[in-house]
Image (cartoon, protein in one colour):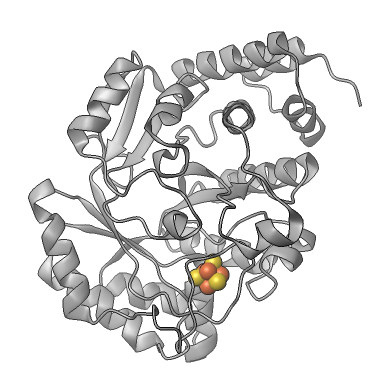
Length: 363
Ligand code: SF4
């Protein structure tokens, strides 16, 4: 299908909703002039929707276990229990990690781990409640939809009861990770042991129905095609229309270097320009429905993340402190950016830095 690029972008700027075919068209653009039109359109829509403010959050990650038997082909973080470099943190160790970050004034801790077969639902509950008791003012953003799904299966409790119990014990919100590409033919190749698309959607819907906010993500730049990327965006927009529970969209470029998936499918890293194009198309497609779109300095590095701010992005993510998942896959962009560095990068890019909390309340 041939599409008039200028008219699709103009209509998106006027608030018209793009369709899947139009997304596919924009993603395949190759000539410099059309790509610049795309960038400008996304930049204008970003300004119209959220102004020149670029937000960031002071947070830290705690990956509490890397033991996992799911064997996703794109993941180099997981280890089997017998591997010498496998680990599971005690609760006191997890608390110590957060204490180490306290001098930075963190407002959020993000907890995610492997699907450790030795963990029961009560282990997750104890972890959350111990952290909440020790740090009552820190927002706990924790457990991917797949971890929630696993807790539900293992405990034989409903997803709804699992989420409610976690919230009662201190959970604040849920990262919308484990989405990868929401297409079961792709999932069969990259993460066949993980939940199916419908199951991911179900966990997210139930969280939103309970009033628990989540982020939305995509992991792109591997075996998926433009149609599957477009369908993923479409699914997220439709979900948001019905629940309003997504706080942000976080497109995550795939880091291939040390992964089995890259070796078996000869995947090379996606270029920065292709990442930026996807950011811009996401902005135009999601429009007013998901106004916060986050770049990923952990995956792209500081310079490319700064550049991405002119492609429709309005959030720089977090200080992070200790990022293990991308690093295990071969990313080498460091594990910490201070809030002063982030502010400096945003200002250098001609935007206005603003600290936020997990739910995008201005600090
Ligand atoms: S992505 Fe998650 S579920 Fe898959 S192997 Fe890695 S840690 Fe396990």
